[in-house]
Length: 628
Image 1 (tube, rainbow, N blue to C red):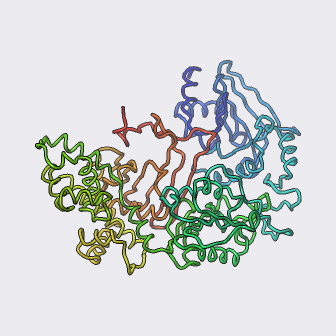
Image 2: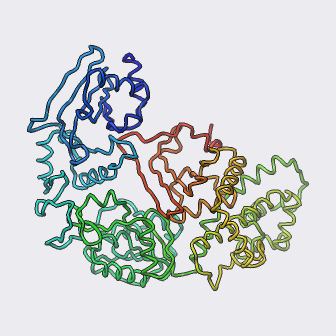
């Protein structure tokens, strides 16, 4: 291999820590590079007879025909390991230079170890936690000065910390026992958990997305921290108030339509107080309560100092990390009501049950572009009509037609904004629909009827999956839907139950995946394994497949940030993928969420910012109509 070919192979490396002049990977990632480059690396090691225990990091230089083999003996056991040996091989000169730092008082040290290893590396989560702690106290603000041990120790001390025997951060005022059970001698400093925000918090953004911050609803931010959300809401004319025991103890606690309990439960170390806080917030809510907490797995939690049922951070704050299913169960146990997942660690609990039903109905009602489909249908039908009442009042009839297609049935008077006008012109809604069908035909209306019925079947089936209690009263629109599409409530439930029971049959799911692939004519179908498609096509796939995916996303929340959905045919899993720069030619994967239906578990993985995430090189396979 010559230098030109070497540079081409180095440029294809998608893993590792990337610097302007070099790419570093851990030995566990060697299978992730090209076969040719891996073979060259192994041949060099064998030719120089470098023992396996004398290297664990490979450095591929970008601008020179050189490869270095570095030895960090404490890579797995120490947070910021020191370099002991470095073998630099000059492939132009066929020479090797060995540097020994094992006796140095100021050797080079390693940061951000998670960048060097592949996703399946067992300790990657722990490495990410170590980096996060360093970022929180500003250790990486000036990366040019942290490459060697002495400067690193000096910087850490200037922040008020030292390193324990495993290299983990601990306050100078605290004992260095990062992995032992502890009872703190001082009080947990809850006030330090409040952060400055420069945009609405995650829970508030979700409320806005569901039109709950349109000015019609009052908001109480219970545990508002420094009040950034409140100031933003008030600036937009929303009736908002906030209270916080540390930062705004004089704030008013008044009953409001919406109560936000944002990242409060996870900072309360006393279990009884935590339960009381949740119950009090619920008591102030007249319509709904939104609860959010920090989500993390065992690999993250195990890196901190255990304290009660959570951990103590290096800033002497308490954190009770939860799993997605765990916090949902806790909320439902304390409040005795259903918690609806709307995001990672974010749940809405409705006190107003009619509003809850309307929320879920809207969630499963796919917004289809009926106006665009109507125009397409008109162009392809070839039908022509003489001037009539429709053409005379074209805009009014277009609005009525679009409303009819969206509902899959004629709208009631209150369901169409211009009902009085259409009745004055056509005589009634039914007569207006008859005129439209005579002009445009039944095809698109029949399609809309099936689409709306599918939406309702998904709604009822997922209600059964969630074991939601039947409500005594139903929204008026839902009553009309049931009468039009099913004749009775029991008929709707029985049909939905039959579909839900089919979800557990891999053969049924595979048939639905094939049917979906053949209908939308895009995506990636792997026989007997999986089907990947863009979320925009969710309304075009069979109802049974929507229910299968819906059962999974009930555990996760809104699909707003998601681009691709992967239905695993036999394993009972659904994977959601979020990409950065989707509108670009080659988006990159930023987050992957794997939902395990059988275990009711969710695995979250976010790709870092400082190494290249996996690119989606075949984007138009999933969304061909956006190709120009």
